[in-house]
Image 1 (tube, rainbow, N blue to C red):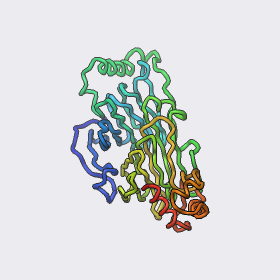
Image 2 (image 1 turned 135 degrees about the vertical axis):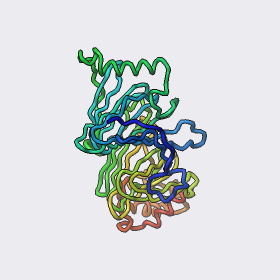
Image 3 (image 1 turned 30 degrees about the horizontal axis):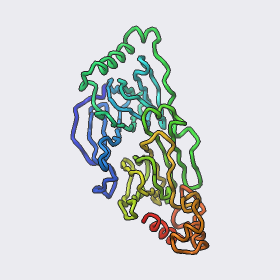
Image 4 (image 1 turned 90 degrees about the vertical axis):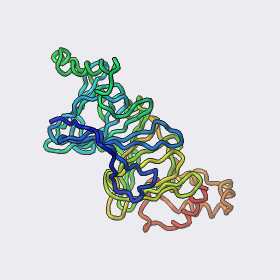
Length: 360
Protein backbone atom coordinates (compact mmCIF):
# COMPACT_ATOMS: atom_id res chain seq x y z
CA UNK A 1 0.00 0.00 0.00
CA UNK A 2 1.30 3.43 -0.86
CA UNK A 3 1.67 6.31 1.54
CA UNK A 4 0.22 9.16 -0.43
CA UNK A 5 -2.53 11.70 -0.02
CA UNK A 6 -3.68 15.28 0.01
CA UNK A 7 -2.41 18.09 2.13
CA UNK A 8 -4.45 19.04 5.15
CA UNK A 9 -4.57 21.94 7.57
CA UNK A 10 -2.74 22.65 10.78
CA UNK A 11 -3.51 21.02 14.10
CA UNK A 12 -2.22 21.39 17.62
CA UNK A 13 -0.75 18.32 19.26
CA UNK A 14 1.43 17.55 22.26
CA UNK A 15 0.96 17.93 25.96
CA UNK A 16 2.52 21.27 26.88
CA UNK A 17 0.53 23.46 29.24
CA UNK A 18 2.17 26.55 27.76
CA UNK A 19 0.59 26.78 24.33
CA UNK A 20 1.27 30.50 23.98
CA UNK A 21 5.03 30.17 24.46
CA UNK A 22 7.12 30.59 21.34
CA UNK A 23 9.52 27.95 22.68
CA UNK A 24 6.96 25.14 22.34
CA UNK A 25 6.24 24.28 18.69
CA UNK A 26 2.77 22.76 18.66
CA UNK A 27 1.25 23.71 15.30
CA UNK A 28 1.64 20.63 13.13
CA UNK A 29 0.69 20.60 9.46
CA UNK A 30 -0.42 17.34 7.88
CA UNK A 31 1.46 17.17 4.60
CA UNK A 32 0.39 13.67 3.57
CA UNK A 33 -2.23 11.31 4.97
CA UNK A 34 -3.63 8.01 3.71
CA UNK A 35 -4.51 4.53 4.90
CA UNK A 36 -0.81 3.70 4.76
CA UNK A 37 0.38 6.45 7.08
CA UNK A 38 1.00 10.16 7.35
CA UNK A 39 3.61 12.91 7.36
CA UNK A 40 3.34 15.89 9.71
CA UNK A 41 5.67 18.87 9.90
CA UNK A 42 6.08 21.50 12.58
CA UNK A 43 7.70 24.71 11.40
CA UNK A 44 10.48 26.37 13.33
CA UNK A 45 9.97 29.83 14.81
CA UNK A 46 11.41 32.74 12.85
CA UNK A 47 13.43 34.34 15.60
CA UNK A 48 14.82 37.85 15.07
CA UNK A 49 14.82 37.81 11.30
CA UNK A 50 15.81 34.17 10.84
CA UNK A 51 14.02 33.43 7.56
CA UNK A 52 15.04 29.77 7.43
CA UNK A 53 14.52 28.06 10.78
CA UNK A 54 14.75 24.30 11.08
CA UNK A 55 11.54 22.33 10.61
CA UNK A 56 10.82 18.95 12.21
CA UNK A 57 8.99 16.20 10.33
CA UNK A 58 7.21 13.12 11.67
CA UNK A 59 6.65 10.12 9.39
CA UNK A 60 4.45 7.18 10.40
CA UNK A 61 3.85 4.14 8.16
CA UNK A 62 1.73 1.05 8.62
CA UNK A 63 3.31 -2.41 8.11
CA UNK A 64 4.11 -3.40 4.51
CA UNK A 65 3.69 0.09 3.07
CA UNK A 66 5.68 2.13 0.58
CA UNK A 67 6.32 5.84 0.83
CA UNK A 68 6.41 6.54 -2.90
CA UNK A 69 9.53 8.26 -4.30
CA UNK A 70 9.69 11.92 -3.35
CA UNK A 71 12.01 14.86 -3.78
CA UNK A 72 12.92 17.54 -1.26
CA UNK A 73 15.47 20.29 -1.69
CA UNK A 74 16.66 20.09 1.91
CA UNK A 75 18.94 17.82 3.91
CA UNK A 76 17.01 15.22 5.90
CA UNK A 77 18.47 13.73 9.07
CA UNK A 78 16.40 10.66 9.88
CA UNK A 79 15.97 9.16 13.35
CA UNK A 80 14.13 5.85 13.64
CA UNK A 81 11.91 6.02 16.72
CA UNK A 82 10.20 2.63 16.28
CA UNK A 83 10.23 -0.10 13.66
CA UNK A 84 12.48 -0.88 10.70
CA UNK A 85 12.68 0.81 7.32
CA UNK A 86 14.47 0.33 4.02
CA UNK A 87 15.52 3.68 2.60
CA UNK A 88 16.56 4.17 -1.01
CA UNK A 89 18.02 7.34 -2.52
CA UNK A 90 20.39 8.57 -5.20
CA UNK A 91 24.02 8.79 -4.06
CA UNK A 92 26.78 9.66 -6.53
CA UNK A 93 24.38 9.21 -9.46
CA UNK A 94 23.38 5.70 -8.41
CA UNK A 95 20.80 4.10 -6.17
CA UNK A 96 21.81 3.21 -2.63
CA UNK A 97 19.72 1.40 -0.07
CA UNK A 98 20.05 1.14 3.69
CA UNK A 99 18.06 -0.83 6.23
CA UNK A 100 17.56 1.19 9.39
CA UNK A 101 16.38 0.01 12.80
CA UNK A 102 15.25 1.70 16.00
CA UNK A 103 17.80 4.26 17.19
CA UNK A 104 19.53 4.61 13.82
CA UNK A 105 20.42 8.01 12.39
CA UNK A 106 20.99 8.52 8.67
CA UNK A 107 21.30 11.47 6.28
CA UNK A 108 19.59 11.96 2.92
CA UNK A 109 21.38 14.83 1.15
CA UNK A 110 19.47 17.70 -0.40
CA UNK A 111 18.71 17.11 -4.07
CA UNK A 112 18.22 13.35 -3.81
CA UNK A 113 14.99 11.58 -4.70
CA UNK A 114 14.18 8.94 -2.09
CA UNK A 115 11.64 6.39 -0.89
CA UNK A 116 10.83 4.47 2.30
CA UNK A 117 9.55 0.91 2.77
CA UNK A 118 8.31 -0.31 6.14
CA UNK A 119 9.98 -3.72 6.43
CA UNK A 120 9.16 -4.31 10.10
CA UNK A 121 7.22 -7.44 10.99
CA UNK A 122 3.72 -6.15 11.71
CA UNK A 123 5.18 -3.08 13.42
CA UNK A 124 4.30 0.53 12.76
CA UNK A 125 7.21 2.66 11.62
CA UNK A 126 7.80 6.04 13.23
CA UNK A 127 10.56 8.37 12.07
CA UNK A 128 11.61 11.87 13.05
CA UNK A 129 13.56 14.04 10.63
CA UNK A 130 15.08 17.48 10.69
CA UNK A 131 14.41 19.60 7.61
CA UNK A 132 17.13 22.18 7.28
CA UNK A 133 15.30 24.81 5.27
CA UNK A 134 18.25 27.12 4.61
CA UNK A 135 17.97 28.05 0.95
CA UNK A 136 15.17 25.54 0.41
CA UNK A 137 11.42 25.40 0.01
CA UNK A 138 10.81 22.76 2.67
CA UNK A 139 8.97 19.45 2.34
CA UNK A 140 7.14 19.24 -0.96
CA UNK A 141 6.48 16.32 -3.21
CA UNK A 142 8.61 15.87 -6.28
CA UNK A 143 5.67 16.54 -8.56
CA UNK A 144 5.72 20.22 -7.58
CA UNK A 145 9.15 20.72 -9.17
CA UNK A 146 9.90 20.99 -12.86
CA UNK A 147 13.53 22.06 -13.02
CA UNK A 148 15.71 19.89 -15.21
CA UNK A 149 18.05 18.77 -12.42
CA UNK A 150 15.21 17.55 -10.30
CA UNK A 151 13.68 15.68 -13.21
CA UNK A 152 17.10 14.15 -13.87
CA UNK A 153 17.36 12.96 -10.26
CA UNK A 154 13.90 11.42 -10.53
CA UNK A 155 14.79 9.58 -13.73
CA UNK A 156 17.99 8.32 -12.13
CA UNK A 157 16.01 6.84 -9.26
CA UNK A 158 13.57 5.06 -11.55
CA UNK A 159 16.30 3.82 -13.87
CA UNK A 160 18.24 2.48 -10.90
CA UNK A 161 15.22 0.59 -9.62
CA UNK A 162 13.86 -0.92 -12.83
CA UNK A 163 16.55 -0.33 -15.41
CA UNK A 164 19.85 -1.84 -16.42
CA UNK A 165 21.80 -0.37 -13.55
CA UNK A 166 19.74 -2.42 -11.10
CA UNK A 167 20.18 -5.67 -12.99
CA UNK A 168 23.91 -5.11 -13.36
CA UNK A 169 24.44 -4.33 -9.70
CA UNK A 170 24.99 -0.63 -10.24
CA UNK A 171 24.33 0.33 -6.64
CA UNK A 172 27.06 1.97 -4.58
CA UNK A 173 27.68 1.88 -0.85
CA UNK A 174 26.39 4.72 1.28
CA UNK A 175 27.66 5.78 4.72
CA UNK A 176 26.55 3.42 7.47
CA UNK A 177 23.88 4.70 9.89
CA UNK A 178 24.82 5.74 13.42
CA UNK A 179 22.86 4.09 16.23
CA UNK A 180 22.27 6.28 19.26
CA UNK A 181 21.34 3.32 21.44
CA UNK A 182 24.24 1.09 20.43
CA UNK A 183 27.12 3.49 21.11
CA UNK A 184 28.70 4.64 24.35
CA UNK A 185 27.12 7.81 25.81
CA UNK A 186 29.10 11.02 25.91
CA UNK A 187 28.23 11.37 29.60
CA UNK A 188 26.69 8.99 32.13
CA UNK A 189 26.09 8.91 35.88
CA UNK A 190 23.53 7.48 38.31
CA UNK A 191 20.95 10.07 37.26
CA UNK A 192 20.97 9.67 33.49
CA UNK A 193 23.02 9.77 30.33
CA UNK A 194 23.49 11.85 27.21
CA UNK A 195 25.07 11.38 23.82
CA UNK A 196 25.94 14.08 21.36
CA UNK A 197 27.01 13.39 17.78
CA UNK A 198 28.66 15.86 15.45
CA UNK A 199 30.61 15.63 12.19
CA UNK A 200 33.58 14.00 13.93
CA UNK A 201 31.62 10.92 14.98
CA UNK A 202 29.38 10.81 11.90
CA UNK A 203 30.85 12.44 8.80
CA UNK A 204 27.56 12.82 6.81
CA UNK A 205 26.55 15.52 9.29
CA UNK A 206 29.27 17.74 7.84
CA UNK A 207 27.05 18.53 4.85
CA UNK A 208 23.99 19.37 6.93
CA UNK A 209 25.26 22.03 9.33
CA UNK A 210 23.56 20.07 12.12
CA UNK A 211 24.45 17.90 15.12
CA UNK A 212 22.23 15.51 17.06
CA UNK A 213 21.80 14.52 20.70
CA UNK A 214 19.85 12.14 22.93
CA UNK A 215 19.26 12.51 26.68
CA UNK A 216 17.79 10.08 29.21
CA UNK A 217 16.99 11.42 32.69
CA UNK A 218 15.93 9.18 35.57
CA UNK A 219 12.86 10.11 37.62
CA UNK A 220 13.25 13.56 39.18
CA UNK A 221 16.69 14.23 37.69
CA UNK A 222 17.71 17.44 35.95
CA UNK A 223 19.88 18.29 32.98
CA UNK A 224 21.71 21.16 34.67
CA UNK A 225 20.93 24.73 33.60
CA UNK A 226 23.12 25.58 30.64
CA UNK A 227 23.29 27.66 27.49
CA UNK A 228 24.54 26.99 23.98
CA UNK A 229 26.94 29.70 22.77
CA UNK A 230 27.16 28.39 19.20
CA UNK A 231 23.82 26.90 18.16
CA UNK A 232 20.05 26.88 18.48
CA UNK A 233 18.66 23.64 19.91
CA UNK A 234 15.54 21.75 18.87
CA UNK A 235 14.18 18.84 20.91
CA UNK A 236 11.43 16.23 20.76
CA UNK A 237 10.13 14.48 23.87
CA UNK A 238 10.22 10.75 23.15
CA UNK A 239 9.11 9.32 26.48
CA UNK A 240 7.88 10.46 29.87
CA UNK A 241 6.86 13.80 31.30
CA UNK A 242 8.79 16.68 32.79
CA UNK A 243 9.40 20.41 32.90
CA UNK A 244 11.43 22.68 30.64
CA UNK A 245 12.46 26.10 31.88
CA UNK A 246 13.96 28.78 29.62
CA UNK A 247 15.43 32.07 30.82
CA UNK A 248 16.05 35.20 28.78
CA UNK A 249 19.70 36.36 28.65
CA UNK A 250 18.76 39.26 30.96
CA UNK A 251 17.79 36.78 33.70
CA UNK A 252 13.99 37.02 33.48
CA UNK A 253 11.91 33.88 33.08
CA UNK A 254 10.94 33.14 29.47
CA UNK A 255 9.03 29.88 29.91
CA UNK A 256 8.25 27.18 32.42
CA UNK A 257 6.26 24.43 30.71
CA UNK A 258 5.19 20.88 31.46
CA UNK A 259 5.99 18.59 28.55
CA UNK A 260 5.20 15.02 27.57
CA UNK A 261 5.86 12.60 24.72
CA UNK A 262 5.29 14.25 21.34
CA UNK A 263 6.08 17.81 22.38
CA UNK A 264 8.62 19.79 20.35
CA UNK A 265 10.65 22.62 21.88
CA UNK A 266 13.43 24.90 20.76
CA UNK A 267 15.86 27.22 22.55
CA UNK A 268 17.86 30.02 20.86
CA UNK A 269 21.55 30.23 21.58
CA UNK A 270 22.61 32.25 24.62
CA UNK A 271 19.31 31.41 26.42
CA UNK A 272 19.88 29.46 29.68
CA UNK A 273 17.55 26.48 30.07
CA UNK A 274 17.13 23.15 31.83
CA UNK A 275 15.04 19.99 31.59
CA UNK A 276 13.67 18.14 34.63
CA UNK A 277 12.10 14.67 34.62
CA UNK A 278 8.93 14.19 36.65
CA UNK A 279 9.02 12.00 39.73
CA UNK A 280 6.76 9.49 37.96
CA UNK A 281 9.43 8.10 35.64
CA UNK A 282 12.28 8.77 33.26
CA UNK A 283 12.32 11.49 30.61
CA UNK A 284 13.84 10.86 27.18
CA UNK A 285 14.33 13.46 24.47
CA UNK A 286 16.14 13.63 21.16
CA UNK A 287 17.02 16.59 19.04
CA UNK A 288 19.16 18.68 16.74
CA UNK A 289 21.53 21.63 17.14
CA UNK A 290 22.19 24.05 14.31
CA UNK A 291 25.93 23.43 13.98
CA UNK A 292 27.80 20.38 12.71
CA UNK A 293 30.73 21.28 14.96
CA UNK A 294 31.17 20.11 18.54
CA UNK A 295 28.63 21.81 20.75
CA UNK A 296 30.16 23.15 23.95
CA UNK A 297 27.30 23.99 26.31
CA UNK A 298 28.16 26.25 29.23
CA UNK A 299 26.75 24.76 32.44
CA UNK A 300 25.76 27.15 35.21
CA UNK A 301 25.55 24.62 38.07
CA UNK A 302 27.59 21.65 39.13
CA UNK A 303 31.14 20.39 39.30
CA UNK A 304 31.83 21.36 35.66
CA UNK A 305 30.01 24.71 35.75
CA UNK A 306 31.34 28.04 34.56
CA UNK A 307 31.28 29.26 38.16
CA UNK A 308 33.40 26.33 39.30
CA UNK A 309 35.94 26.86 36.53
CA UNK A 310 36.15 30.61 37.16
CA UNK A 311 36.42 30.34 40.94
CA UNK A 312 38.70 32.98 42.44
CA UNK A 313 38.79 36.36 44.16
CA UNK A 314 37.64 38.16 41.00
CA UNK A 315 34.42 36.14 40.80
CA UNK A 316 33.80 36.56 44.53
CA UNK A 317 34.23 40.31 44.17
CA UNK A 318 31.72 40.35 41.32
CA UNK A 319 29.10 38.82 43.65
CA UNK A 320 30.12 40.95 46.60
CA UNK A 321 30.80 37.96 48.87
CA UNK A 322 33.85 36.42 50.48
CA UNK A 323 35.70 33.89 48.36
CA UNK A 324 35.14 31.21 51.01
CA UNK A 325 31.38 31.82 50.89
CA UNK A 326 31.29 31.53 47.12
CA UNK A 327 33.36 28.34 47.20
CA UNK A 328 31.01 26.80 49.74
CA UNK A 329 27.88 27.61 47.74
CA UNK A 330 29.21 26.66 44.30
CA UNK A 331 30.89 23.54 45.68
CA UNK A 332 27.68 22.32 47.32
CA UNK A 333 26.77 20.51 44.10
CA UNK A 334 29.21 17.65 43.63
CA UNK A 335 27.53 16.20 40.53
CA UNK A 336 27.94 17.58 37.02
CA UNK A 337 25.75 17.89 33.89
CA UNK A 338 22.93 15.58 35.08
CA UNK A 339 21.90 16.35 38.65
CA UNK A 340 20.02 14.27 41.25
CA UNK A 341 16.40 14.96 42.28
CA UNK A 342 15.90 18.07 44.37
CA UNK A 343 15.06 16.14 47.53
CA UNK A 344 18.62 14.78 47.50
CA UNK A 345 20.13 18.25 47.33
CA UNK A 346 21.45 20.52 50.06
CA UNK A 347 21.99 24.22 49.66
CA UNK A 348 19.62 24.36 46.71
CA UNK A 349 18.20 27.78 47.56
CA UNK A 350 21.64 29.37 47.76
CA UNK A 351 22.65 27.97 44.39
CA UNK A 352 19.50 29.31 42.75
CA UNK A 353 20.27 32.80 44.06
CA UNK A 354 23.74 32.62 42.52
CA UNK A 355 22.32 31.55 39.17
CA UNK A 356 19.82 34.37 39.08
CA UNK A 357 22.61 36.84 39.71
CA UNK A 358 24.76 35.29 36.99
CA UNK A 359 21.92 35.52 34.47
CA UNK A 360 21.31 39.14 35.35
